[in-house]
Image (cartoon, rainbow, N blue to C red; front, side, top):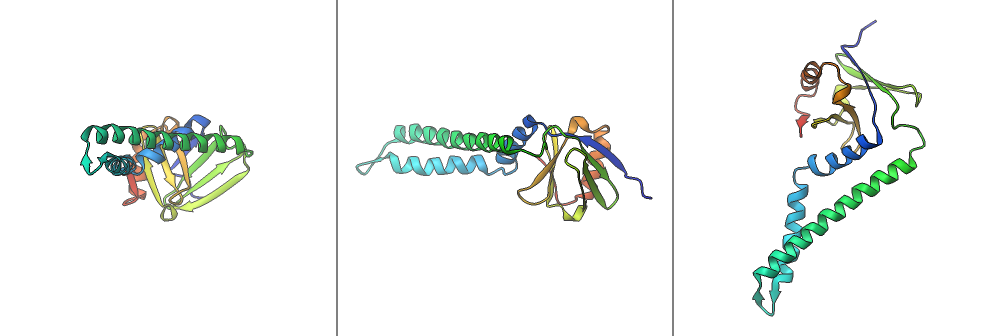
Length: 173
């Protein structure tokens, strides 16, 4: 029987999930903040015209306020999504151990607490992203699984393995 190349036991705490939401919102797509700034600028341009006259002070103040308002709205949405996920979690997914076995051609994922087991080939994943604290495996554009870096014994070997398996779909964020 084939032996896995690597085995990683990791968990996702409620705090890890919250961090993931912020990463997915602000770091996964580099255009989020510039797009909010642009929308705020367009709104402030509209506000800055007074009786056919352009008011630079009104432009700057309204842009800053609209941009801050847009950021606050996104932060509230992230926090609400986090609170909703924690409140509706009946499975015990948080703080349960996920065992990931990495083979040459696939990953086998197991969670004894959830009584679940799954297997995916590397080519079935949408993408893998690496942040400061996590490896994020995207099953689809909107569904992901985390591996905490602090749960990986040999980080350099694991990263080298992952980069090789996900060529063209690996990104450091």
